[in-house]
Length: 326
Image (tube, rainbow, N blue to C red; front, side):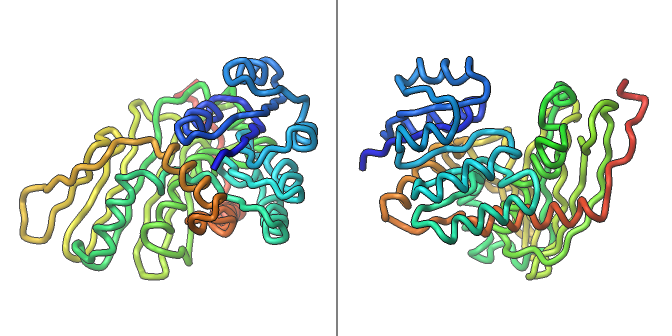
């Protein structure tokens, strides 16, 4: 199937989408960005037409699908307009900058003949698929604890839109732990309870830059989902402990997952194909567009992340900054 793709947003994350579409044989025909220089750059790289805004792109170029790679505040308007025109949408996470916008996108998706998929790429990583297979097999028993950390030295976030509430909707919990929430739900099932503690170290921002989200699954599993823009070293892992053993994946060791069972001292390795998940994600999206299978990640998954983060933001607020990082 030959697919024509449009890009709404041409920043850094769009580059990862672009690479994956090219690998899948899709044709990029149209791009737009509020930053005209970024749009022209992607247009020159791909041969795509450059448009002033998403409405002009959709009305004139009429792509089969679009990737929305803008900051969250701009997701709703572009997604709703595309869905009304029957254009399939892959939208970067989080779904929106606020819950009301996420629900507006959901309503538009339910009325549309087109498909809408939130871009939770982590669930498509071969390593995560392999980890889920271990959990489903019952090898490590009933799951008790789920630990996940995503963070690193991103001190420049203080001066980017990621820490501007009016644009991003939240801080590290919404931006980074949106993946964590989706991973918990993908691997272990629905979340029925959530609480959080968070802190704002940056002095010039209005959102948290470090947070710990505690969740409870319907199956009784408890999760600790941690994120920060301020860690001195990059850290990214998932560690799941059950009544019969433990399985873990370290993103810094992308070619394996590790597990050990009750009574065993040594870890056992399971080889996996290293990947960032973008190619697998977009291949799945395009396969669904072609009618080869149903979407494995739906608008419901995007809205649930927004509902959970909205709940903890309503009950907790980031503390004021600390002097140690000034």
